[in-house]
Image (tube, rainbow, N blue to C red):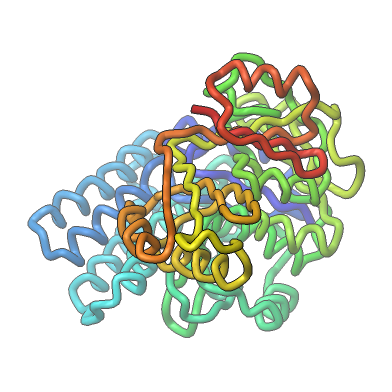
Length: 414
């Protein structure tokens, strides 16, 4: 088996659907399972429906109409109006309307999963029908019947034993299967798998099927050594080891999320990152082997950071009980820690204030500690750094902190 995952950008319009059909025809549909995300920006559109329904605003009908018209326009471009897909999509939209009319729950996370999941159901219905139309025989499957989870809505945990049993015994692998990314099922309810959920879906099926490979099709040629939006010169990484990919993700690189890599690493299933724009390119392979090919510095940038220096007011050592208290407050106020530096009497930390709670954190610590901070700093991380790479970053501003751990250099620049 081989697993293909196509994200929302690859199916953002009718031409996108035609393109992925061409890719599958060229790559071969035999022994293949395809995972498809919601089309284009439809996850955002369904989030608008969630917000309007939960907050009881008058924008609900407008948000529903936008979703319906978006999918209708794509279908009109791909199909004759009398084809069955129009009725199939209307049935799915009717299920959404039925849920909105009968729901009594006030649990936002539960509502989110039940509503947002319709994006993937619609996209896969359309992709499956188009494949059938052009002669690519396939089986549309509801992923909620195969990937079973707990009830932790919006970040559900997979029941691996049950999921593996269902996939291995109930999935017909004799034909091409098309299913949804991001979703799971718990009893009669939809759950979602959290960040990078569609990639994770592909990895779950790969693990359970002992797949030959997973390919994630993106709008880039593969994994680059730096974000091209921040660096003028970038290079394609042809090979990355599982461990290196996880290290890069830990420091914030836009590679593959560790939860996707972990089941693949367990069974040594290689992961390919390829371009759906230029499908002839081989892209990047993540697998067992050398850490990087080519072995070059890899740059990760995090903007809008806060550098905080904390010291006890009584000039005492920054030992375990002090640091434990600080981390408790970091967790309480949802401040992401990206760098730590500790000395005898001070503790420095580089923070990401995603939820705008730094002021509360500052007040909570001010009674016991002297605190100083610098806002709007940039954290640069260089994996496999050399002197030239280090100097290129040091030129970008004033270096406030420099820290080396093994082959990783981190610089905080103002």
